Image (cartoon, rainbow, N blue to C red; front, top):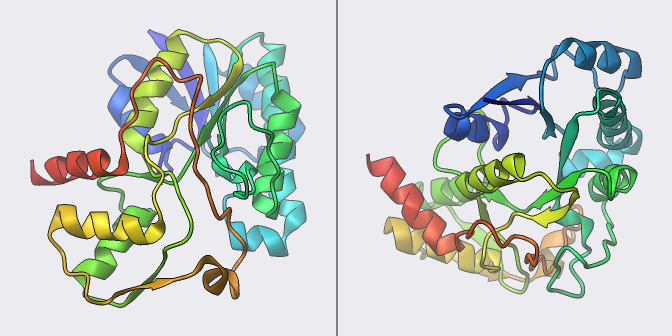
Length: 279
């Protein structure tokens, strides 16, 4: 059985990967509370103690707003921590997969595929791209975008936040002139399973097959789950970012390298989630 060590095994994405694939892959969790990845010596000692075939690096500093206030910490975790892990894994001559983000693109000239040139604007995105630059051509880099799933008590993704607001009949002001690419986490897991067993260094976008505006996304959630939309209103991107960190406006992410697993559209993902919640 393939052995995959990973950071972020308890997170939104990592926990679902483990849940779906643990019957055929032996996962070895490296929890953040047990290892400071910014400490190179500690990382080297820990990695040396683990027997694995592939190291999947999911853990990251992901607080987009917080990163603007603490640039140093974001880079320590996302660049330096990634460097420490890769060097320790590489010293064992093992394979490495780095999970990155669609935020490395600035959202001004969509669509973006694996050959598009990143231009990260926010500190979080810059720090994740710095990790990519250290690893390029040496490992598999996987970019994901707006991941969502049916259940996860520890953290609400954007889908479950939208659904909660609609269910509680609370006002929602949604951007109508921007694009996001929602990605069903189950699809990420199954696509990663292919890459685990068919490892080839390169960049892969494991993203949903449909770019949609946040307003359109809310309306789809309402449609699939039969919820009222009378308190949903439209706002512009510029109105939204006046008081928040700027996010990529047109995050239309596509893939030319993923020819091995068909990713769902947002509507298809929501229908699958509805089925999962009913059984």
